[in-house]
Image (cartoon, rainbow, N blue to C red; front, top):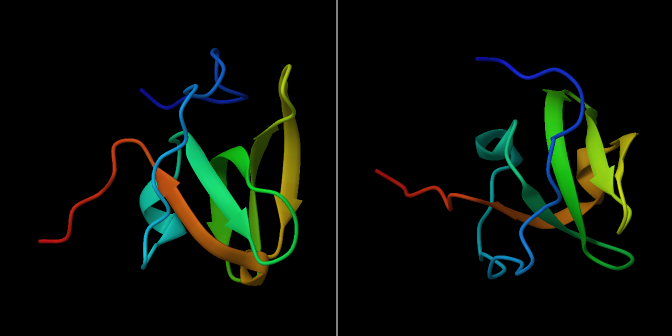
Length: 86
């Protein structure tokens, strides 16, 4: 079932380990931890990924807020469950 709108629950309390290689496309509609190139890491719930834009909901510590940004600003991302390469 496809969910529209922000997640119903807060993100996990423990962030995943920072991966050496990450693909944000694997994390659509999953709780995702983002390490930006500049600034502090944050929880994100991506709902849409396009060329030059990723949008979804960012956790501000209290609730989810809609947010969009350039994926070139991301250093690494990880989500639950951590995807495995086949």
